[in-house]
Image (tube, rainbow, N blue to C red; front, side):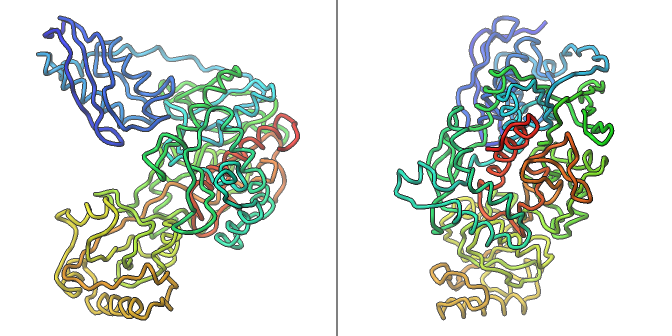
Length: 563
């Protein structure tokens, strides 16, 4: 039996966003209470849901008096922070934390294989899946929502909580003129011939309506921002609760959607992974899934349809690195569950899987977290050559890098950057620095002559006040004059894959010949064909598209009119 010195102790662990500070209270032989004192964790992942670590995992530790409680799949980092903080308190109270980590937790008996009947079955619980589930339930359907992880939200929950929309009341209140036509023109210009024009046009004309639909359920808009830099009009709508203008969390829409789904009587199955779709006489009539906790099989019968909102494959490292050579040793900002399950299941029954030649490519310094968005310095390939206008949206910089085939890039600066994370990167011992470009090139492993020529040309353009090579704005052209030069290595990173399933404007999945597959619908990253060109044009576009066509897919499955 455990033995403690009664009292309340304070401990800390490190979560996704920094310190998680807890107060743990002990009796002589038990943990009696655990309270969250301070944290900056993600709303809709760490807390806010019935399956979140703060709501679910902490009570389980108290219930079982154990630090061996299985972690919430999809929120392991937060669970680990809790375990570390509680273990610290256990030691302070005179207990044995290592022993507590070995206290067994009862394992539920394996469930028998089972069958579940529903009108609509939705796989994936990000913004695409949850919006579809809520819309279908609101249409009166019996809906089952199936999620591979131990928590709803998917990539959407850990997103920046942004939505792009035009002609919104928030814009009008600030005197900002915008229109769906102009939004379409902006997206079309960014993506070129890759776009499915009718579908994107439909999204643009309904983005405001979908935003208001979310707001009615509890989503709050904090402020607006430009798609990039000084670009007008301001049409990116940030959720409330973030750290200033550009930082929110997707939980702002995941939590209210999840609450609304349960209010409407919906059923959610967690830790359940799609394995195959069931097609009979040409129509998708259901699906099979595996309970990831005990291996049992769940067979779903869906009388009105199956909706896929399972996301892309950005976490499928083997596939990404084999398809996109410039993504070697890349970093992904999405759940480990983003393996492409829905794409492969649909492809197996004849759905078209478009192999898009690009994916979202960003650049990130893995030690500091510094990324490239609006920095004014010089970015070069691994061979030391400049390749783009550095002052454009980060995903477009990444897309330009992808065209060169370079697996990563170098950010060259003389220091004194306005970005805190970038300045921190300059202080790290593994960041090359030197008193000359030639010396810096040697530390980078780059041909000194190539890098010197690149920097000399860049400085020449800066002095001329016009970037005739890549048309970078003159106000963002600053000479590199020393006395110290730094090179920050930027790894490729991604959170969104392009291509995948093709849907029509009603959310129905198409086969290899462009024909509708009856009973099968999709939305979001699983069906990104026709949505993107070489890169992501702006924050909030992918999420907005998922929201729009999640609702449309549900209305089509329930035989309701489009929005």
